[in-house]
Image (cartoon, rainbow, N blue to C red; front, side):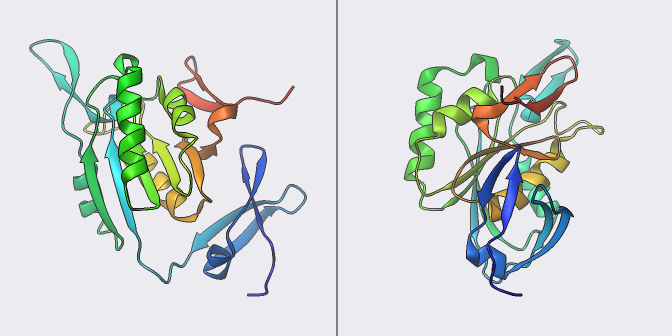
Length: 209
């Protein structure tokens, strides 16, 4: 592969991909004019990805007797083992709440936990209602690639988007540059330019005025 600078479109914002990633990546241009690319990374080094769970719909359990949902234990560890991933990973629960109940103290705890983690690649599962707020709160953390994801349906549900979103986020955390990113609905979002469309039940980019 020739030495070249390549850009990846993140919700309308072009970001440089580190040269170490370029060396191990096969790029396929979808749109030469815009610089948008699809890619497959051939990692030559194994990395450890630290996964932190912060509750939300992705970890909810349906209790029939209560006719209600409660946040249960995360199943991300089971999902990754079932997928037979070849990178090393750890899973640590930090918050176990609906995201609407997350407090500033909870976000501070998550901030400190991520900051003190020795790994540079961080995946956070989080409820979708306040995911953007938490992502913005984590923006000051330097030198780490942090990706937040979640789901619109509990991971234990057969028709859940959780497994897809986790897989997509795990690919993203391995190739995106340092910073805080949101991986939802098959797209990468800049927290400062993202919103949740409640009517359509999806994340969207905020268009520049």
